[in-house]
Length: 123
Length: 108
Image 1: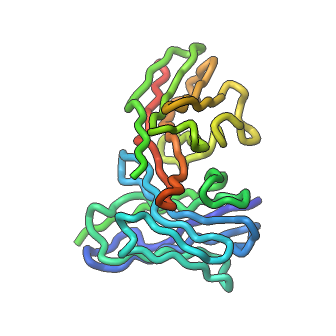
Image 2: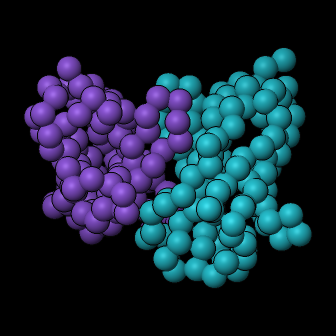
């Protein structure tokens, strides 16, 4: 069974940097034709796409958050890592990683999601 | 930037048909994906590429995309269909994912 699992701190102070990991089980993060995105959801609100890393570790970011985001792969741990700098209470929400697979990062759906991790930004 | 608009809520009686729309400029030129998110759960896909169903999704779920509007149709609605539904596309002009604001489906 293939699963994705997000992990990271539940509470972060304003201005700190958030680091989240998405651990793959049953599948390698280096699988061909696979892309991994990070998506977040403030409480009671809509989904927001944040970032994507492709098969060749090419990266793409939400234009509004681009200066604060970095996504990378840690192949030794079979993980995808998201860092987000200068956290603000407005960044509070559930953060999901999701896979898309089909050969076209900018066409394929998110067919597999992690369960999400809730991050609260508060002093 | 590309924007997707959904009605905030749709209500339907059990056994009836629910229709959830997603609007965007010239949307028919893009592939639309639909996700169901039950309370406190992760989203799960229910329709891919405008009108394809993932494995395990009942035939009651179907999709279409024409002009500026994509539509998710759920026939013979059941209590278990009560959830938030989000449409999604890729904006290849800006290389980013775009979600609609979500529609809360209430089964009366």
